[in-house]
Length: 178
Image (tube, rainbow, N blue to C red; front, side, top):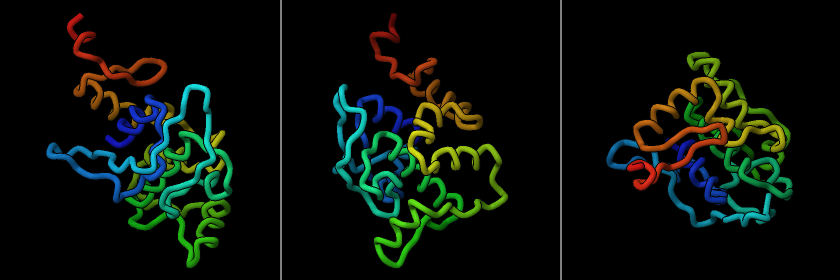
């Protein structure tokens, strides 16, 4: 659900910038919903990245930690941190001080995931937590990974969305009636 929500957010040129467990809630249908867009940023069509840094330190991407320009792939990193936390019940990076935490995010690798999880799921996680944002997958690429694609397709079929080669789009009532 959250990957689908993030795809929709990115399709509208918006960076969430604060993806963390506290910003994921369940609605009345027990679907995960991404909330708190208080520090989100809209990129205009000419902007490919920004350097305005914000977010919860535990989930910051390496590029934000280093004060570099960042883009949608920082949201992917944050989502990967949440997934890691869900799988291991621990945060991917820690530090007793903010500088130590930022250093660890930039230079250390995340720990192993318990062996009870599938190789496909671990590959999805690793694809999201690639240090180099140029090598990190986009949300569209993540959603096309084995194991994710099948679940996403079922979600979109049920929610009046369409999947094409370039990603996922909402089918409007007008299009649905055509």
